[in-house]
Image (cartoon, rainbow, N blue to C red; front, side, top):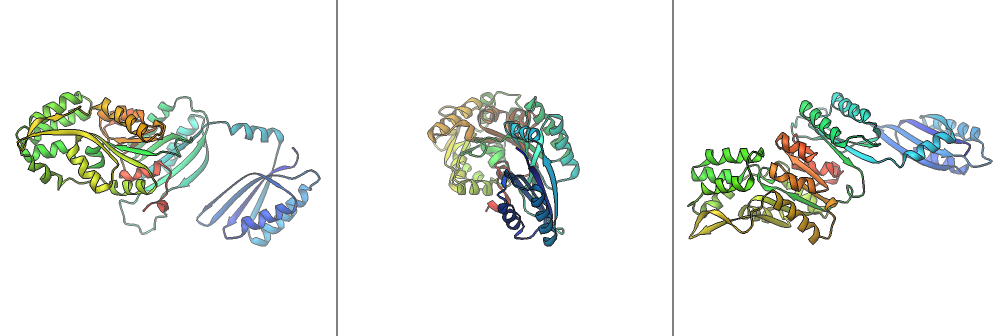
Length: 403
């Protein structure tokens, strides 16, 4: 295993550098055992781990590369690699890989330092860093422009949950979002995204809007908040809230539906998911009337929610059929996955309330969206600083991939 060498080429980037270097190495019959390249602000860093064949002259390769680098106006550095060092590098390939996604409106050195410190403390080594968002102009005045960096890391963390809690603490302190995912085949092959509806796909709680229209808004909102914090059983809270809507004319449903806003990024997210071939679902403790409105507007594939019971044109304060509570949400996610013939590891669930946690924990990737702290901690992944379309960054998509 003699004549192993790490070649590092750096300087101003331009077309033809890789072609020229690899062509020269080809003249000596060199094997390229590993190769990586990054360009930041037109500054190139190209690395090649090479093996010079038996009978080859390392000195000649070095001399010719140095001459060529000089001719091209770039620099070249050489580091011999021992057989022991090479074996250690090969063995490291068996360590698990992880993806850490840092999301915010801007990315600061302090945020990167905080993330890197958690990684180092848990024995993880950064292998590569990629920017998923576009290049911001210096005179950018758009306060809604996102910023996202993705770290590819390798190692065996001792306590993944503790790492996630550390990232949640940093996120809360620095106004960013940080997600940690194992980089496996399932992460790159998600096929279904299931959404809660109220306060997730849409900006409001429908039952609160109905209550406002019916004049019982404060009473219902208080019950809703308590349920979202996990202080009330969902079935009990739903029954209490619905009882306050008894007698409401059904035509008021349409009037309320006309003024329900989508959450930031919802249309962009669903549009791109459909474009990339994902199936989408609404699994909600809300109401089918409004879920079907969303289905028509966004092109959602599945809708499961509670059906309001209406008799003689008025709400009875009850629902027809089985109530979609926390456990039922998880069961419905399983059912849709079976219907689509996919693994649960290929599913994503997005929600904001305590009743979403069983579904979030069952999915391959569970995301708490603008949720209460208890839900963020239970889900393990959270988006609070950006819109729903930030889910696309957790899937590894770049701005240039999106419409």
